[in-house]
Length: 449
Ligand code: PFF
Image 1: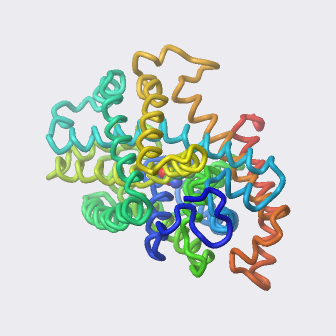
Image 2: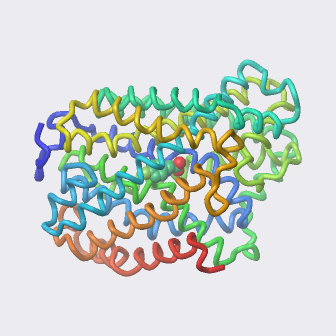
């Protein structure tokens, strides 16, 4: 295996994505807890359909061009987020920025894996019925997250993702996503059928789909923009890394459009489950992060066959989370393979083990034994989330736009864009996206009060 294989060959030689395999894997990365957990509650909080509309606009106008740019760097550079930049430019600092993205993916996975573990635990509780043995769902969540049990589930998550990544691109990541992404769709449709036939469900649909523009503020716009980035997995090197395994002949523009559509579609379906379900049981859908672990179990507990539907719902979340986790793990794994000339299996298991260790304090700091240790009011979990999502992610996004917009002159050629489409793309990368990203960044640092 060579680590400087720019031009033509994927970084691990023969192992690469098939056309559809790449789309499935990228949709698997994009569709995650962001769609199923964060999207519904921020939509509830920031204006329902009006917010959704903004999200769609930002996703198409800013998200897709940046997504295309990220995949283009990977396919052009044929390496990790570090090596791809180094292969495409002599200026070393781009590589340093690429390295930051690798660090970011590592950090995100260490707490994203914790939440993924919660969903597995809840699937288990739900199928066995013990979730519904008491109606104090807030208490159930608090006693679970306050115990050592989340560490066990983090371990399960890291073993699963490590196993998939160790099996490689076509035999591991591609296969995993090709099975689970269609399965996710089936589960979403079953749950949507259940949700929409609940008495009173239509009120939730109305809330989700009827725009209330009076709730739109500058803040909701920034949240929508930030979420468009997070939802498309941008700025963390995941799409770049997947891009490195794509065939030269595949159209990246077409792929970006398919991934964006897929991401939107799954978010829409998730909304069509969560809002009707909450409305049918007169539960509020804007209650922040606790929505899916505290509010929705109450709904499942009260509906016929709730044990089954509740279990299915948490399996859905777990699948969405795991396919994203796999993409995050691949980012540092390919770097370790290049840097230390490790075999994929060793790199995958070693990195997964490290992330597990780094994630343990996160697993113990949401109401757990470590939640007393805070810095500036933030627990270890919050700090990692903040550093990765609010600092490294925007920086990563900015680097991608500036690199393709200004530094790498052959980006358009690699992306397969010509004529007006190319000019629009370049315009967005040069002027629109950097300003937008800077705004999200300043907002998330609290600079707008
Ligand atoms: N896009 C994922 C979600 O919506 O849950 C989260 C994510 C995955 C963000 C990978 C960033 C990333 F690199």
